[in-house]
Length: 225
Image (cartoon, rainbow, N blue to C red; front, side, top):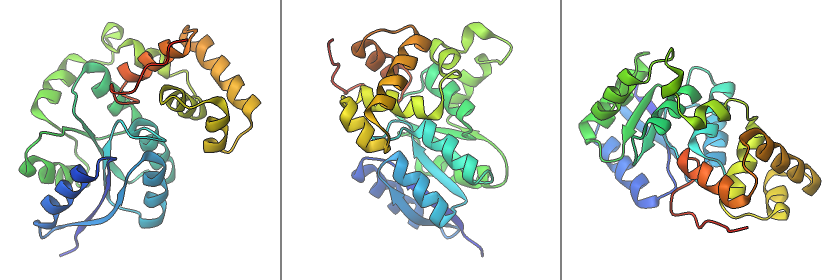
């Protein structure tokens, strides 16, 4: 039997270990790697080419939404199942729009996690039951239900999304420049564009926005400017 290869992308080690042990009990599933942040997840997908990625939304360095977009640019056939502790409308909508074909709450049963992996591998979609009910309400033809984040985020480039996350994580321009391998002036220009596009004009506002979108955890310390 050919096993379905799975990459685990989750920044909490104890959660990754739990998923690994769960999947190791299944004869048709095989964990081929573990990533603790979005950048590492993208790099490991390129190297290991897993069939399915279990991707946490809120991860350091690069969030799961942007990581999913980058993964699918490299390997469009890869199936991404998003993981989150929250099922807010914005989280669900942004996950599906990023290209995820599944969305699971972290308290989902082991049976449903394994079932989700098998279903998406077959080309289907799979969502936690509460998420499915939300999707029934989030119709594309209903702009009022798309959420403020999605409407605005559609205008942001991948680089701007990366800069936004690092700003929300409290990184200074110099640290952001080093992390992304770009110049400080370039970071400043991206920050300026973010504020213009989102109509948000302080760091605390950008951080609140990133938290509401699921880009960073709500435990991130707000920086008052």
